Length: 440
Ligand code: BJ8
Image 1 (cartoon, rainbow, N blue to C red):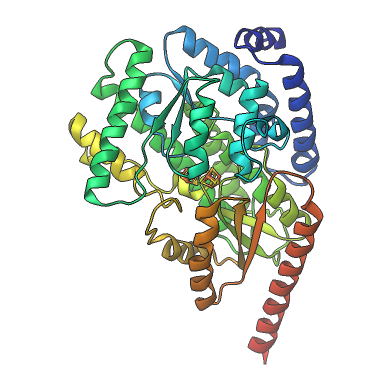
Image 2: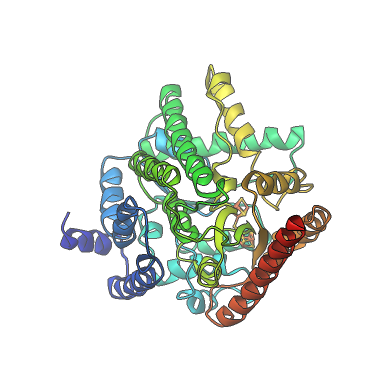
């Protein structure tokens, strides 16, 4: 597909093409600096390098074709929206832009300054018309997970058709019943776009496609972080793959991730590591890393550490559970299994959110990690408050933890790097002291 065609599509969906092209140049420049300068990258990352260049170009042309066939294109901000239903209808379900500082000043003309940067960034992208995914959406599906989000949808709806899914904040029986009705309503909205009922078989197919995508991501997660001596891929590259999972075509994406995993398996058996054997291996816990938020990963990996897992919605929380197809025999049981799968998401919007801490400790043990960073986007109250309970348990388990609260601006880059360096130094010191003691 020629770039001229991409441009025509961008114009058709009313993207501010000039501003969009400036933004994409800046984003791609940052990607070249941070990603393509890395040494010894897996060859299979070439596809993802191409995707970074084309996700707002050829991918948008692809989505436009989907729409021309009368199939849905749905924009989301949260992993609670059941993408299986959209994919079952032959449509495209994608996460909207929300990881850049660039549109925030525009967003602050309508939103308060002191709310989470993810929401402001996403809203600003709409005001500027610089996210081709937002512009492609038949409608946006918001949810009631946090205060700032649910109020923003009322304002966003003035600019772009926005439906809101009610996500309960508890997981009692009555909450799950309400949730099931919300999933059914979501299906109705998709049927309105396609102008017919969605069949049971189509929904099963959607589930199969997305299950396979999550399986591939889980495979990558294990290959990336379970070996203490060999790190076959950098944390930055693995993060980008997960970020791409929210916008790429799922069947092709799954195939490319599995090819990458094949290569990583080979690297593991041949001891090909991108970092030295004693590099401190960290897990990151907390809020999502929307594309192109690479700030923390860059700080860690430029300071001599490596990130081996994100306990985040752009990460393990997204792909850890699949829909159980074995229990599905009709549409009602299919809806039950969807709700069952989605209610396993341990977002801090739930109270209580039991199980998250135990899961984190288990993940830490499985990976034999050396420390964790509890990362919260500024003004995300749920994750910020919940960090107290998580850190308490981590301390009991003797797990080193650094807390970082940040936004998308460049202002605190130096400060974060200094704190990360000090954290990595203290981990290395403890490791050396342990080895010395063991040698005595
Ligand atoms: S399931 S984490 S994607 S809500 S927008 S809650 S960072 S203040 S994104 Fe999330 Fe769904 Fe939960 Fe995951 Fe905080 Fe910001 Fe709100 Fe946020």
